[in-house]
Structure formats: C-alpha cells, structure tokens
Length: 142
Image 1 (tube, one colour):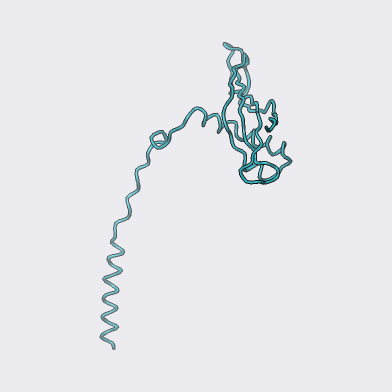
Image 2 (cartoon, helix red, strand yellow):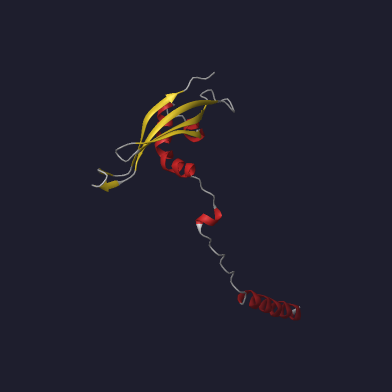
C-alpha cells in the first residue's frame, strides 16, 4: 500500500511539473476597427441621433417598456443643411403597436436637428454639440 501511495505521489509531482512549465497563451492580434466592420453614413447618423429619438418615443407612447426597447429606424427620408451650421434629418421609424400584437407596428416620422460643435467667426457660428427632436408625427395607418 505504501508503494502505491509513493507511486501516485511521484506521478502527481511529474504531472503538476508539466502544468507549471506550460507556456501562456499568446494574445490574439487586435485588428483596427475599420478592417472588421463595414459602417455606412446611415449607421453613424443613427448612433448620433438614437438617444434623442429614444427619449421622445418613450414620451410619445406613455413610457411603455415595449415602445422604448422595440422601436427601429426604417429609413432616412431627408437631410437638410441649415445656414446656422446644423442639419435637419427626417426619418421614419416603426414602434411596436400599443396592443402588443406581434409583428404589428405604428409608423412615425421624426425630424431631428443635429448641431455639431462650432466656433468659427469665418462661417459665423458659435455653439456646442446638440441633438434635438424638432417634430414628431404619427403617420396614419392604412
């Protein structure tokens, strides 16, 4: 019995020695963002205006959880450049129907003004970055 215990002890020492001298995993190469992702201008606009629209959708639909988490952008309808160095972006969105029926959405039109930060006497603007919802329309369902 003592021989078996001694044998297991020796085998255990050799086994743990191999684990101690194991090489650490080499870190994977981190690739730049642009190589791994395809980003469109519409994706960039969506990221900028998302928080403002999200707050307005929740306000329009009475703070219901489904309206805040379930709305989705459909398409950008129009982008206008203003003389005050801002952009008015009109887009359609779909919001889950208030009856909570699956696959039924209300379609709305939202107009958002994006004012990039600007401090230039050359073009006559002096303001910080700002995103505001100008108009929110509930489109009629056919």
